Amino acid sequence: MQGVGYRAWTKRTAQSLGVSGWVRNLTDGRVEIHAEGHPEVLDKLAFACEEGPSFAKVQRVIIKEHPNCNLIEFDQVATVSPT
Image 1 (tube, rainbow, N blue to C red):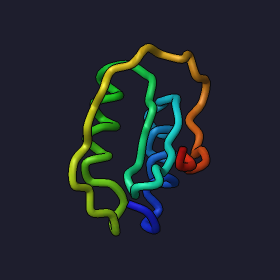
Image 2 (spheres, one colour; image 1 turned 135 degrees about the horizontal axis):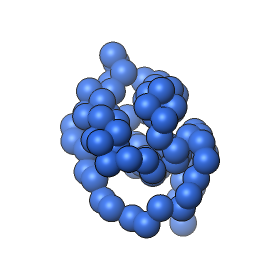
Image 3 (cartoon, rainbow, N blue to C red; image 1 turned 90 degrees about the vertical axis):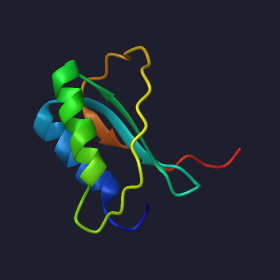
Image 4 (cartoon, helix red, strand yellow; image 1 turned 90 degrees about the horizontal axis):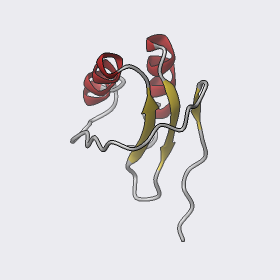
């Protein structure tokens, strides 16, 4: 989902909700988000990500739980390079 402003939209949305973490593109066109915050707020972010920005066509959102990294803010980070 590249070229529709999804990462920038995610960053703005997460910051408005007070979520910390990051968002990045994957080389296969998917977007990966690591988000930390109160469970209710994370649910709001996940719901918003199902819609995305106006030009996005979101096929699905997959949620996996991971330990928190105690991040302070939400950033847009570089695309993962192929290994």
